Length: 150
Image 1: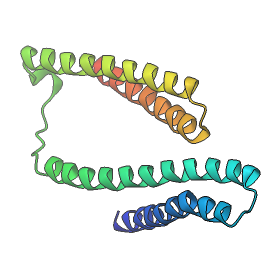
Image 2: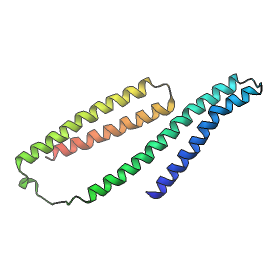
Image 3: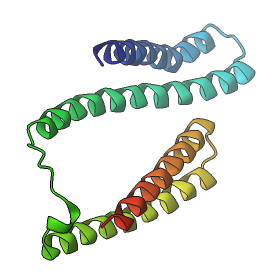
Image 4: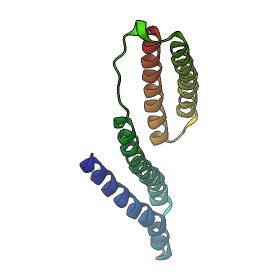
C-alpha cells in the first residue's frame, strides 16, 4: 500500500504544478501579444481536467490514510465463530435492519451517481460518476446476498 500511496502522491504533486502552470501560462503567453483564442480553448479544457485530477489524487491520498486507520480498527476486533442457529433472534433482527438501511443508502447513491453522470458535460466527472454508480450497484448486490443468509 505504501507504493500505491507514493505513486498517488507523485501524481498529485505533478497535477498541482501543471494546474498552476496552465492557469498562469496562458496569461503570460497572451501578454506577449500572441493570439490565444484556439490555444486558450485547448488549454482551458486540459486545465479543468488537471484540476480535477489533482483533487482526485488528494481525495485518494486522504482515503488511503482513512482506510489504513479503519483496517487497524477492524483487525483489533476479535472474530467469534457462531453457528447461525446459535445467534439470538434479536441480533438477527438488528443485523437485518442494518443491512436494509444500507440497501436504501446504496440504492439512493446509485441513483444519485447515475444522475451526476447523466448531467455532467465533463468527461472526467461523467466517467467517475459512472464508475462509482457501478460500484454502488455491486454494494447493493453484496448486501442483498448477505440479507438472504440471515
